Image (cartoon, rainbow, N blue to C red; front, top):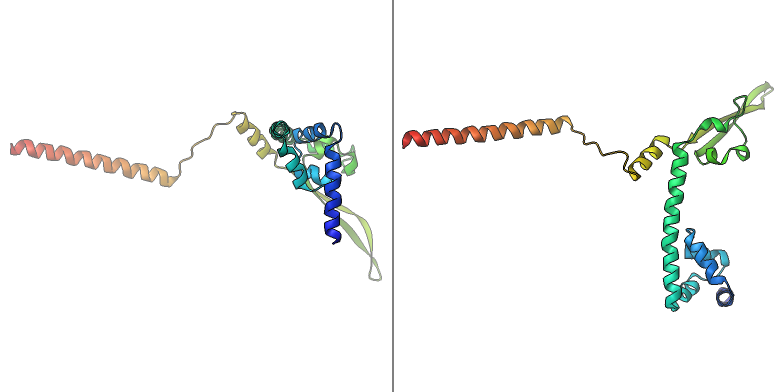
Length: 200
């Protein structure tokens, strides 16, 4: 029963939002920046079906929201391209200080931070006697996103790299067999023609 009341409350909130001036424009702006309708509904704590039905109920609203969706798709592609470009131009030296120590995460430059896939930190202990151990430092490992793959992706996207056809030893063998068979067939035809002329 409480669940049904909660849904009713969320529906009521949705219908109140739909009546507010500027709400539709806010939704359009979110969609055009790559947000999904389900994300918007979750953020507003309203049922997804209410906002979906509301947008679809009016043809003008539907056309504008569909257009905003398309713009959002272009926005996402543009963002991914930018991220990939930053990875391709990354310089991991920006993650370290003057003395070669790894900087705290909150001090990483924005561009450099995006190039890091993961960070692994392990505590290093030292025996101090009596079965006791003392923390003496940390071992830190950084895994970066594949820079070469990012460059390749950008190159293919802009038509810089052309596909290179590779041939294996098996391909060469097949080609040789094909040429040999073709030559054998042609020789056989020549012999048949010669025999036929002698017979005539």
